[in-house]
View 1 (cartoon, one colour):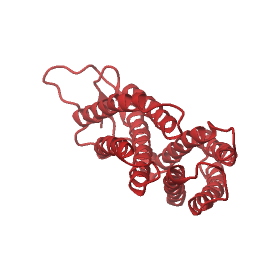
View 2 (tube, rainbow, N blue to C red):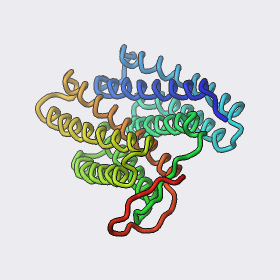
View 3 (cartoon, rainbow, N blue to C red):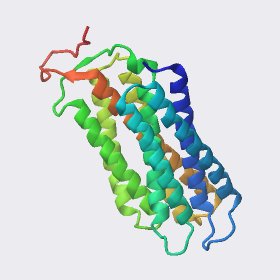
View 4 (spheres, rainbow, N blue to C red):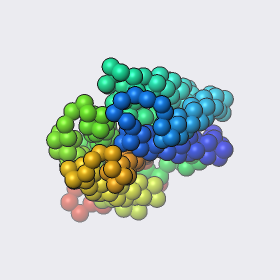
Amino acid sequence: MQTPGLHRYSLAVAALALILIITGAVVTGTQPATPGPATPEQQIHQWFAAAVGLLTIGLAFRLARAAGQPGLRKLGWAAVVLVVVQAAIGMLAPSAGMIYAGFVHAILAQLFFGLTVAIAVVTSGEWSAPAEQIEDQMRPPMPTLANITLAMVLVQITLGAAVRHKVMGAISHIGFAIVVALVALLLGMCVLHQAPQHRRLRPSAVRLMVIVGVQVFLGFGAFILKLMMAETDLAVVIVTAAHVTTAALVLGSTVMLDLELHRYMKAGVPHRAGARPTVAS
């Protein structure tokens, strides 16, 4: 059984991981063209990275001691591994010749945030309570659609990191963003159709749809500003950092909805005309 303290601790780690992504986006937008002494933005990012690293080690030990479940222990130590790899790559990123280090560093930061969100979800009191299940009348099943959406979000995040770190151009990222947004909105609408009153699934679906809409708006805003201004201009840095932050929130919301669909949806008969989804007793 999970404790409120462990859940709050995992929420704090996830919140700091999000702040770390924000400061990292600012560093990427403001860093000088040539390596030099650490800027104030880089120092702040490093301080948050150190705090996240220490708290993640503590989280792993707390999960190993309090969870009593091998799966949760593995999640905790997976988070530690990501932190260690992140730290190593972060030190290489400013070095000459490591043109892909920043790109990989940005992707792993998003993966780490998604993992901390997953830990926060499964350590909540709601997760250990009896599940209010819904018959899944979709084909393909809703959890499968959620898995596909999550995979597409991860691909889109990878494309976005490649654009920001000059690994590739923006055309593929922009085109795929439209596809991901449509799939995420479809997932949200399907959840609202099948579970219109569910106290967990409905809020998660609405949250994902809203954040995806904001993300699309910020993405096009960042693209237009970069056409009009230098990448280091304050307006561009702010909008781009907001876009990166919202991308993390899209990932976190998708992870949350994916986990909840696997927990609360049970296999049911295909939907028939006039039939209504029912809540399992």
